Length: 167
Ligand SMILES: [Zn+2]
Image 1 (spheres, rainbow, N blue to C red):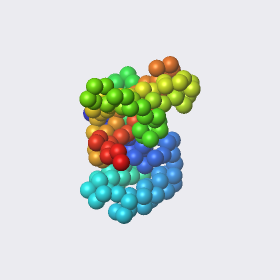
Image 2 (cartoon, rainbow, N blue to C red):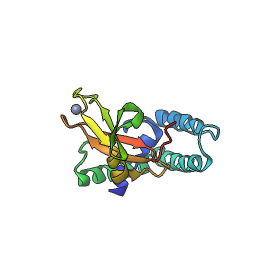
Image 3 (spheres, rainbow, N blue to C red):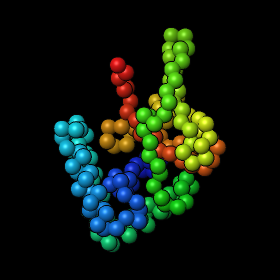
């Protein structure tokens, strides 16, 4: 499962798998600028820059990109999760509505989101426990969970950070 939930190079750069070389170059430059040290923690930033460089070096090379596409395709087919090889839509917990319920001494937070495709109400639901038990480190200081709509076949990737301070 580990490499399955890791971001693809396309997702890292924020481009479509069909992006042209010019689009990839542009996205790469923008991402590098966005990871300016003023905006991100230093260690996180270093990791991001390394990942961006790796992604870019593969995607800007025709042959390496073809090999990478093949590999991604195989990986997704093997998992059975995604057949098209397309990237998943990525959302964060900020896109969810959060309810906190007291349960004895504890409180349980539930995150709900309507499905952006079939508009099912609360098509996506996550609890604190899901986040703690089922998250996969994304390699950049955060975690992610892949979640399917309860009413249709849409999958979303939810990115979040553990132990978020609530002020
Ligand atoms: Zn849906």
